[in-house]
Length: 121
Image (cartoon, rainbow, N blue to C red; front, side, top):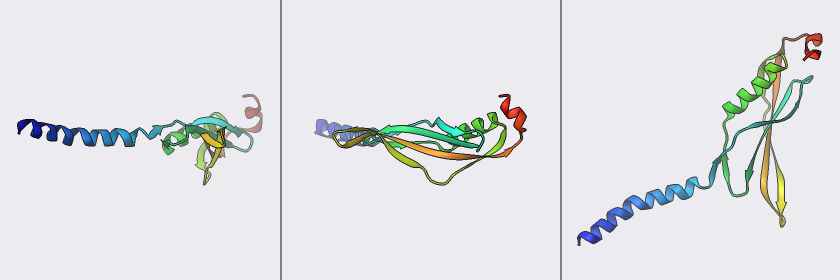
């Protein structure tokens, strides 16, 4: 009788752990990275990639900080996210996309640099 109770207790502990590991196995943390932009227009593009069947977790705050740093280096004081994002297939395999790229744009605001000082950078 004790063995049955011990196994039941073990299963009560093990089952939630297995469920949690199965759910978190599909999530992945991705980091934004610069993927383009235009200094004159004050436009910053950031992207991240993720494989098929994964639900990436990304930080909007990390993206905004990265965009602000790029804008600051161009002589702008502020940054505003542009609504929306673009998801494109980065790699096809047998007709299925197995790698996705997500790109988001940010608009730099309040340019403090003069034209001459921007040319010297």
